[in-house]
Length: 111
Image (cartoon, rainbow, N blue to C red):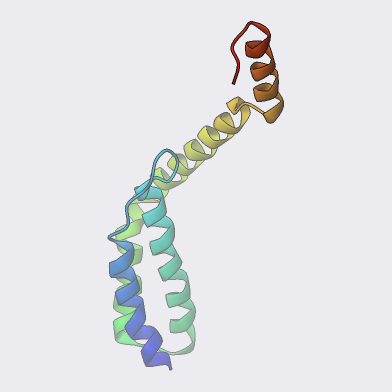
């Protein structure tokens, strides 16, 4: 069982490296960092119970690769949150659309 998990983690990591973001708020760099960090954490937990050189190499390599981007990730993540909040604030409510349609019908534009 443990060998199957250790074998799957590198495959999953390769898959994560191929993902692309989708606009406007799914930024590929942010998602890649989060998902790769999601491989590091369980890898560390597995290594605490059973050492495996392949898993240790993967975990250490990912931690080393992700470390330089940690500060930027947190800044971008905060920016993404702000943009989502602004989008939610500016999104017209259903009441807005009802009033807009009513106003357009009143001036002679029918739907």
